[in-house]
Length: 428
Ligand SMILES: NC(=O)c1ccc[n+]([C@@H]2O[C@H](COP(=O)([O-])OP(=O)(O)OC[C@H]3O[C@@H](n4cnc5c(N)ncnc54)[C@H](O)[C@@H]3O)[C@@H](O)[C@H]2O)c1
Image (cartoon, rainbow, N blue to C red; front, top):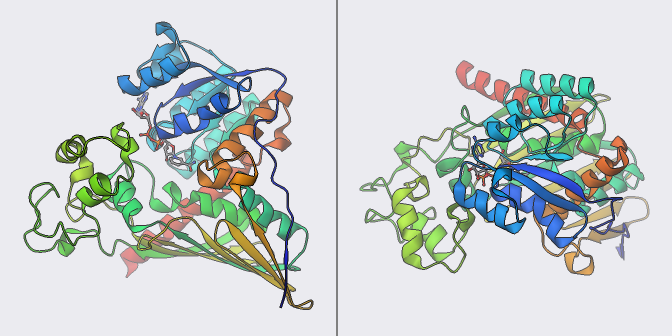
């Protein structure tokens, strides 16, 4: 088979805005720092002018980084809202259950908003956000960062350019990775679907959004199955104590050992606000005192660890999706079937096969060949900030791929999947 390279250029980061845009940040956690890093990487584009976080250390870390005066460092997000509009843009990077309320009020105040996904916790709240956005005319970008990742941009361009003819069906997988599952959805912030959002929204709204975006048509039917197969008390090995640090006899062999994940491999340490080279004893103390040290079989978790969904789009295009906790790596895997060809991709590289020509054309994202370096979500995090700043600067909504309008549908698909999954479980 003849092989060649597919050339879809990557747009650089750091494009100039007419002026430096100011940002107020609600939630100086992982996402709050990830997005605002753009202003440090590309000075003159964005500047943080206020922050709200109930965690004083995080609040002050961001406050120091941007030299904020004391009266621009707030605790609870309500305090920042009460101060009125302080910036061009509000970044809402609070926990899932604190997105809807501040977004509704901030739109009323006239902020343009970068709103982390999930935009809200129910379908009705999503619709209310959209109504408020239409009434106020402000710009709202949802944190659907994959739309901005050069890999997905190129994949979408290949489909739009008709390289595989008419799109017929898609197979898409989100491999979560075994330790990421344990960290976020068993022990961590998203372990409780009611308090946050169900897995298919909390984690997979990115994927449903990508499917909807690639197909480019409304979704008319969904079906979903899945459940919590493994991380339950019934699977606790004999003699496992409440915490991995309590002398668990299985510590040396358990893939989910907190000591192994955090203290030895040094994964996900940002949740403890400690550097990767922190002394082992510092990490072990965190494991003795926070949920991250709990035995994965003894957490109050209810998120599914495997999930299968199917989608029917207007015009008959179908998509199947699986979310799988038990994989060695994360990322995405996608196969797209068209009337004249086929695409297979792994989140970094995809290959387009042309049936008649008998060719294979490959596209690869090389961060070192662009100014993306190795930033989050395959470049999507900072590319979203770039496009959002350009859209706010020019008041051109078309520069924004993940507008509220574009993002509501995939949230509704997720809520419909969860209702279907739970209904099936009750019926079964
Ligand atoms: N777009 C993506 O790919 C992506 C990836 C990860 C997380 N997220 C979403 O981003 C959001 C934030 O996630 P994160 O990982 O940054 O979480 P995080 O816990 O690191 O940060 C959240 C911050 O909010 C602060 N906070 C909590 N309650 C507050 C209150 N009442 N007032 C002020 N501050 C308060 C916390 O102290 C914390 O520092 C979540 O909704 C999450 O689902 C999106």
